Image 1 (cartoon, rainbow, N blue to C red):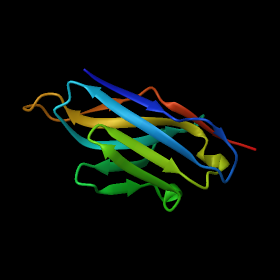
Image 2 (cartoon, rainbow, N blue to C red):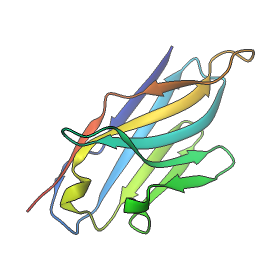
Image 3 (cartoon, rainbow, N blue to C red):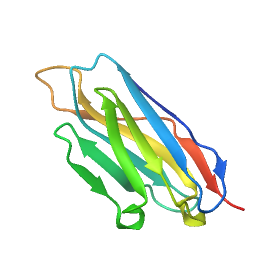
Image 4 (cartoon, helix red, strand yellow):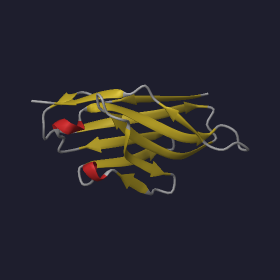
Length: 120
């Protein structure tokens, strides 16, 4: 079983910054991809950014140049969010694609989410 826990959500003014953190734990043999998604009220969940074990990153166009994803340790990933806008308001979820068995394909594991509110 894999546990994914996010932290760092808060209320911030437009133009401000926040740093989200995510930790994966449990019977993990290998992590393939760690990523951040977000879901605003009435909207579908969307990819914000992800990072593969080889260091390759992928960003949504709406956050390029403002957000930075980094994998600090083998099981933690951060999302540095700068120049925040009201439209960044959402619940941010961490997703970890990992293997718990060397003979099984990777599966996706989600955290419970952390709320980010950007408002004056």
